[in-house]
Image (cartoon, rainbow, N blue to C red):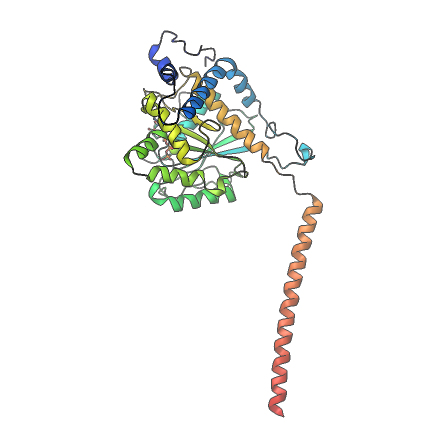
Length: 366
Ligand SMILES: Nc1nc2c(ncn2[C@@H]2O[C@H](COP(=O)(O)OP(=O)(O)OP(=O)(O)O)[C@@H](O)[C@H]2O)c(=O)[nH]1
Ligand SMILES: [Mg+2]
């Protein structure tokens, strides 16, 4: 991967550079037209930041991820040392979104950007329509020293959102496991559930949404995709902590014109009630030839690496202190006291009943 591409440098391949720096024509226009000029300027600045960072520090960021160990991004707060925090060996990041949003393509892109791309793609098991059928754990760094994994999931169906949200809540509560079948996938498509794989607690959620579909939804008045995405963004179980907004990845932006792409991002973020730059990324997962975006687009490569870093930060910063033996004993004691009081309540009820029956028998004899 080439990380030294100059921002705005055509490099002899005008088409690729145009796709990589799609927002540049809007900068030249001044970026102040439209309904929300300030928002547009913020997005333009954010794109320039990513382009500049890709130029300067993509390799550093990649190295940081390659050498990451769970807990590296934790920082001390509350006077509790790191060894007393509940830090798992492997941090788990879960990708969720509607069907066809681009989750599996994003996983592929992560392999391209962070690992060594191979001839065989790393996509998750899919059915005949290309839809993922089970949760799939990916070691996107392809390294045994890896401190995190990414779970790909089957997209939720818009017309069965209630069911989908319930399944997401289950993943968040009970954890996720490699090859765990997803709801809605036919059993024939799903591989046999592998009970031996480790169940992992989800430490961060990345929400993937199709920007082109949301843009259409805005224009056509069919609010379905927007509402379904809104429900997912604000689904309480996916909140890792109360202040953090979910990381939002907008895909399929390459299928819109620069003007539409900018307008869609600003309006979609407004509609979803999320900031339009902080924690939101516009990532084309495949290029115009249907191939994964690689060194032709350093801005996207950097954004992919930053998404993972952000997810790991969220995961490491939401650690809780380990339960101490004293706390566990107190918990056991509390349960024992509850059980004892329930037992005495039961006994007193029985005695009261017996006493009443006895009194009635005596009255009858008299
Ligand atoms: N042009 C373009 N196509 C994309 C992009 N992301 C994904 N696609 C295409 O969209 C289709 C669906 O992508 P997937 O990655 O399979 O979507 P998914 O979210 O995994 O879908 P499910 O497994 O059904 O939930 C594929 O044909 C991809 O090549 C993108 O950013 N731009
Ligand atoms: Mg998929």
